[in-house]
Each structure stands twice: as C-alpha cells, then as structure tokens.
Image 1 (cartoon, rainbow, N blue to C red):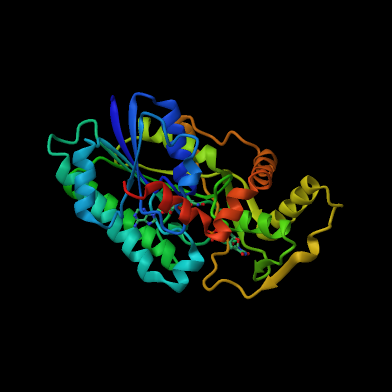
Image 2 (cartoon, rainbow, N blue to C red):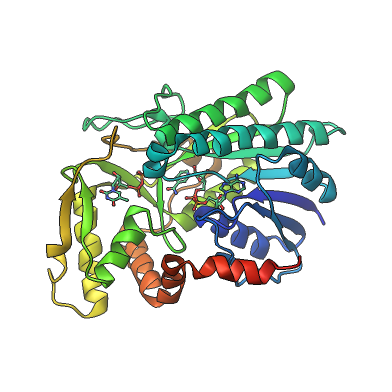
Length: 352
Ligand code: NAD
Ligand code: TYD
C-alpha cells in the first residue's frame, strides 16, 4: 500500500463520508477506520464499502493509549485524520466529563502514539485534526466572520473541549515537531447525521407529526456546509495543506434557525405530497439552550486562495438531497431510533 491512513470516528456522520471518499478514491491506500462505536457510531453508515480490500475496521477507544500504539504499529500508520469526538453541545451541557475525556485525553493519546511510533522521523507523516468553528465563540449580527486568527473563546463544554484539543495539537507541533494540521469547520448537514442534530431531528419529527423544538426565539445563526464538500476539503488539505497551518472551512451560507426550519418544513411537506404550510403548526418554541452562541460564520478565503477549495453545492440543492435521503432511508432512521443498529453491530462483530 502506498499509504496507511488512520481515520478516527469513521463510523460517525462526517467520518463515514471521509472514509467512503478515501476508500473509493484511493485504492492504493489502506484506510483504517478506528471507532469506539458510541451511540453516534454506526457501521451501517459504511455498508457500501465495508468489504473493500483497502478498508479495515478497528473497534477501539482513542483514550486507550496501548490500543493506539498497537494500531499504529500493526498497520504501519503514516497519516492520521482525527475526527473521533463527542460532538453534541446539548450532551456536553449534561455530561462535560465525557467530553473532556474523549476530546482532550483521547486526542492527547493519539498525538503521543504518533510521536512515539513515528521513530523513523516525521518526513512524509501527517497528523490532521478536525475541529470546529465553535472554538471561536459567538459573533454578533454585524457581518463579521471567524478567520484563522480569531481569538479562541469557547462557551460550551463541547467547544471548550475541542479548543483544548486544538491547543494540544499545536503544542505537539511546537514542542516535538509533529507534522500537524488543524481545520475548523462550520455546521455540516447531509446524509447519515445522527438525529439529535437540528436538521435530521426536524426532518424525522415532521415525518411523524411530532413537535419541532425551536430553542429560544429561533434567531441564532449557523453557517451550513454540505458534508460531502467538507469531506472534499479534508482530502485536499490532507494531501496539500501546509504543516502547522490552520484552515477554516465554511459554506458562506448563513441561516437564522427559524428561516432554515421553514425551508425544511416546506421541502419535507412538498416531498411527502402535503399541502404547503401543512407542518408549520409543529413549530414549538422551547427554553433556550444554556450559553447558546448567537451566530457562527466562517471566512474560508484562505482555503480557497491557497488550495483552491470552495463549496460545490448550492444550499437549495443540498437541502433537497438531504431531505430526500432521509425520506428514502427511513429504515436507517428507524433502526437508530429503535436501537437496532447496536444489535447489528453486536451480531456483525461477535467473535471477531
Ligand atoms: P459524530 O458524533 O457523528 O461521530 C463521532 C464518531 O466518533 C462516532 O462514530 C463515535 O462512535 C466516535 N467516537 C466517539 N468517542 C470515541 C472514542 N473515545 N474513541 C473512538 N471513537 C469515538 O460526529 P461528527 O458530526 O461526524 O463530527 C466529527 C468531527 O468533526 C468531530 O471531531 C467534530 O467535533 C467535528 N466537527 C463536526 C461538525 C458538525 O457539524 N457535525 C462541524 C465541525 C467540526
Ligand atoms: P445543532 O444541530 O445542535 O448544532 P450546533 O449546536 O453545533 O450549532 O443545532 C443547530 C442550531 O439549532 C443551534 O442554534 C441550536 C438549534 N437547535 C434548536 O433550535 N432545536 C433543536 O432541537 C436542536 C437540536 C438545535
């Protein structure tokens, strides 16, 4: 194999798109997907490539340092794309310890394993850490954007844990010379997203005629990027990004939550053959999220100017594809909401 790449969190939402892209595009790379399969990890996300000859799955926790050393040695890993994380802000408010453990200690365990296992020098090696725009804090409604030099100002336990992991990644470059790259991306949407996040949750609730819980007044703004565009950016940056650099990735696609929710309702109703406005009564304003960041918006011009990446999909097309995918893959959604995929995993990996 030309390269042996470790992708962590490959059974999750974004990770599964990255694994699929790399397995299909690079038959001469071995792609090792390492995932703990928490509630958010789902091997059904990778059914189409699970038997590919250049794909291997390792069931492990990134916090298990000995297991990380073992994987680096067993597969002769020369590149890491690190996505494994606890990723949902609401869960981080309830259970911050799990976020510190996985996002901080887990990242540290991988960094240390890379440092100790790359004994023949760092030439040709790469440790690519996937982070979030949430580390920059919150913007006002003033048109400003997060750039790569925006000061870190995390507000939630989730963003604090991601910020901390970013600092460790930079420290490993500055202290040990580890060849690291960090990217901070805006909100992703698309197929295979766990239905606790806004878009899949609301599509599923509309399908079942259930209330749509809008936090606060629905005025918060997010910058939405189609997940396949993120995966494409990760491919370009993994191969051509400059060591020790940070790149912001975003869609230049800001939406106020309530406006986005109305687009989702309209699209789902149309595709289900309901009259326009049919599901609008499901909108239910609920108590705001604690510390709810007002606005995120990314300036991704550095990535465009230096590496030529920009979003390929118009939002209207992306949201149409996304809604269609969830409506066409109701079994996937039902399996998650009924817990069946845990059983699928247990059956599939029993005795391995
Ligand atoms: P996700 O929650 O869908 O998937 C996370 C994956 O990591 C799951 O497969 C889970 O099983 C695995 N995992 C969790 N803890 C683990 C551990 N201790 N050891 C090994 N595997 C573990 O998350 P996502 O939305 O795909 O996000 C992936 C990465 O991208 C995260 O690092 C997240 O911070 C970052 N990110 C996400 C977004 C977004 O909008 N979803 C935006 C920017 C950055
Ligand atoms: P989410 O998908 O959780 O992503 P993030 O918190 O990382 O931005 O939420 C997107 C936005 O939607 C955020 O402003 C919170 C809001 N939201 C709701 O209003 N209701 C919900 O049920 C959820 C899950 C999110």
